[in-house]
Length: 570
Ligand code: C2O
Ligand code: CU
Ligand code: CU
Image: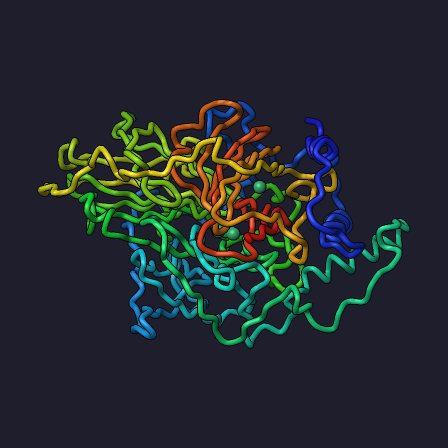
C-alpha cells in the first residue's frame, strides 16, 4: 500500500488558519515521530479495512485489544436500562439536574469489580429526558483525578456549554497541568529540533508558566451546562471531550444518553414505555484483574496523550457491551418495539442484523442522529459508525411467544460479532403504531440550496498524524467561518473509515462516492462515516447559535491524535 497520506496532503495542499513556529501541528508531528520512535512510511499498521465496502458500510478500522480474563457466555446476563436522571427542581423556569463524575466499582464481568469513571458513578450514565422547548441546566461536578469536558453530542447548544475540548472542569485532586500533553510534545519537538537541526525549531520558546488563558478555560468545582433543547425529538448523548484524552476517558465510562421528546412525536403513537428500549452499544477489553484495558501511552492520563503505535488506527475491544453489560439478553413482549441504537464505541463499526434461526428479521428505521425521518424505511441491516444513532422499530408481534431474536454485527466474527438477544416471553396487546408518515413537513435540502462549497480531507500523513486538510488540531487556530442559517455543501474525503462529526450543525447526505446516498444515510445527521478513499457530500446547516464549534473524526483515537478542526459560526 502506498502512503495515501502524503499523496493526499500534497494534492490538496490546503492550509486552514495561521500556523506559527509553535503550532500544535508541527509539535505533534515531531512529537509523535520522536516520542514513539516508529515511522511507518509505507503502510498503516493495524489497518484491516475492507477496500470494497458496500455503500455506506465498511470494514473495521482499528486493532483488537484482547481481554485477559475468561469472558461470560453471551446472552446470559439480563439487559439493564440506564436510570433516568431525576431533576433537582426548577429555578428561573429551567429544570435543573446535577451529575457527578466519579469512580465506582461495578460488576460488569461476573466475579470481577471493574473500576469505571461514570456520571453519578454509573456506566452508561443516567439518561437525561428533556422536552423540546424546555431548556434545562445540568450542573456537572468532577470528583475524578483528571480534567473533563462534557459535550452534548448532537445538541444545539451555546458555545459556552458545548463542551469544547479546552473548556475544562479541573478537579482539586488534579495536580498536573491541563496543557501538559501539549507541552510534552513541545519539549520532544525541541529535542528533535536540536538533534536534527530542523529549521522549524530554531527558536524554541520556554513553556509559559500558566496554561494560556486564550486557549484554556478552567472551571474548578462544578460547571453549569445550559441546554436549550430547542430541537426535534431525538436521541442525543453526552460524553467526555477533554483535549487529547477523550478516548481513554470515554473508554473508562464517561458516556450517557440524552433524549429529547416532543408532542409531535408523541402524537405518532410509536412504541413507548416498556416497548421502547435505549441500547447503548460499545466494546471494551479487560485486563487480568478485570479492569478496562486501554493501550494509553500514559496510563495516568496526565502527561502524554495518545496510544501505543499499534493502536493508532483505533482501539477495538473484544467484549460487546449493551448498556454496560456484556452480550445481554432481554425479555420482551410480542409487540412492536422501538430500539434507540447508539454506537458509543471508540472505533468499532457495526453492521447490525436481527435474525431468528438465521432468518433475517425486518427492521424499520424511523429516525437518524438528529430526529425522525420523513417516513419509515426498511433496512436489511443497520450500519453504525462510532457516535451514530439509529432509531428503529422491530415488530416482535410477528413471532410466537418463545422465539429468540439475535442482534449481531456482521463486521466481526466469533463472540465479537454477537451483540445481544431478545426472548419473546409474553403475549400482550399492542396499542402502538408505525405510521406511514413521521414528519409531514420534512425539510429536504437540495444541492441548489448550498451557498458555499468546502472540502474537508481526513487522512494520516507520512509522519503518522491524523489530520484534516493537512492540519492537526490547534485550538488557537482560526476556524472555518460559516454563516448561521445558510446551507453549505461540504465534500468529505478520506483515506480510512472516518466517522466525521460536526458540533452544532446538522446535515443531510447528498451523495456518496458520486452516487445516491445509502438508505441508512437518510435524515438529519450529525455524524457520517466517510469510507476509505470515499467522497461523501453533505448539505450542512448551523442554526440558533454563533461562536466556536468543531468538526472532527469520531474515531476517538483519531480525535485525540488531532483529527479535529475549529468551525466559527458567525
Ligand atoms: Cu460526540 Cu465532538 O463529539
Ligand atoms: Cu458532538
Ligand atoms: Cu478518523
